[in-house]
Image (cartoon, rainbow, N blue to C red):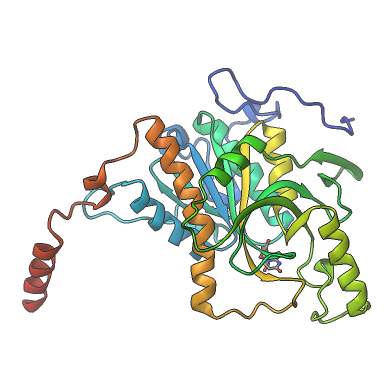
Length: 340
Ligand code: R2B
Ligand code: URA
């Protein structure tokens, strides 16, 4: 059978490409990445994705589409004239995927099963595309513990519901655990990119990953609740005493599968509320939208930094797209519209 404790073997080739820890894949005629609407023989995955260096994931298709537009501007990436960003996985009707040069922006849905399916296919995509040293970053939302709404939290360790730093899998009816480890150096690098001018805190701490938003996160406001407010508070205090600063629903599987694949990874979330003060997510929409941009801003700083180090960041003129003069552009637009 298989080993119950993961043996850590190298999962990356010396040139940085991803080695697959599954001998079956290369024996197959074609590998269909069903939930991405891509295939290893139907598509030239190396040509399409070979240059990917950063895989950024977040819960919703809209957030990842917004991130794609945001990062395009941040790295000065220019689309060829007359073209626009397309959801590459639109026909899967499952996940959304946008590519902006070296950045792949993918939605992962809610909860560990959804992330698990996506991670298998994303890791295989990296392998088929021969991507070198890809870095995976989850950009998400969470509930804070003892931190105010709007705080940005970088995960140091992802813990499961029993505070174990691993993800539990049931495979062929057997239970196994894989370490839910993230790259500590990457976490520190991200933290160092927080600016003293940011009007919010950016912290590092442990993240609790649960299988449910309501009872699983000790909320009193689900359809069911068989515990008291003091039980809830005692639980949250216990989490806090163990160094847990936030709760979300994807970090253990994300950490476990990237670690198993030998891929450098980080989780950056924004707190939507302080769970010590309540359970309902009720900040106004505009406030929440501004908060959700914060992890994106931090990740964009990281991507810019890495690209700049490689001399691959476009200059300021590139960042403005093809518009040489915004004033003249506006005049031309108005003139054209007048003749519609
Ligand atoms: C954060 O927010 C979602 C639940 O509302 C879940 O995907 C998560 O991790
Ligand atoms: N996401 C969660 O999983 N929990 C929260 O409290 C807020 C967002």
